[in-house]
Image: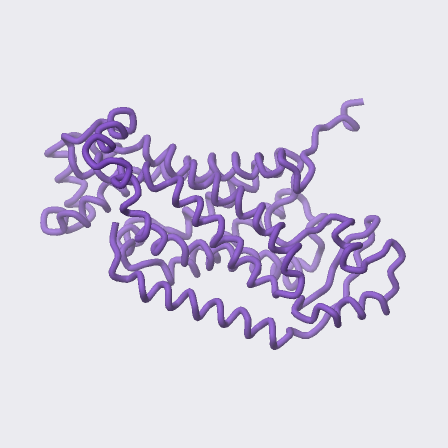
Length: 345
């Protein structure tokens, strides 16, 4: 029977993280490829703001002087560079979220989301930086190279290995704050919609409803993340809707997960053995749950564990210590944004 043999990827396995990485690679690569003309104009407006003073006039100048094909210059860097970045960002985020969720059991979810997204983005930008270095030169110097194939060896010959990574610090300054706030906002938005609006568990919702939640949470994440984005990228924000791009990435990413039999994104899920390590036995009483909750007061809003397909939920007020921890992290992000304002690519 085919229905019993349907392939399903198990969560928290190597195959699971591979699917997450592949989903992030396809979603980010396709989204950034689609906006290549806008990115070409953005880079030229930053390099030569007098010549490229507006959107329509900028496109007209590029097409008149270099032809329509100039609008797609550097497309390979967008597709492969941001594809690799997306794979690392989404795949490693899921990995670090599981690791930090198991290690930091006494921390609020907000802290875990911040740390997971920051850790993933650090590696993602290291992977992106060489592609971005070549892409910028291809887009701004028509005689430099045609693409990645001839751009990589030429940049290495001219500037060595340092040429690929001398823009890493401003890249971190631009992407780290956005990624941290974007992922955290997405997670909290998903939780709020299921608990407060739909008022059903994720498993009880159809796939279409789950993807709808993903799109709404992605829009909210893009909107909030854009507010704290580094001013160095303000031009691109005026050229295309960053919220829409974030929505498309999350939609493609979760669609790929759904096609592989996985739940949509959002939340902290643990294995049964992890629940047992926290004191959740197979026959827990409400008294046991209360004792565990009092032992780990930083786990706020609700304590929910699925054991033998039985959801045990213990609602509680928001813990002041957890909220204070989140505010400290937000304060550090604001300092980081202020510090990196002077950096541009």
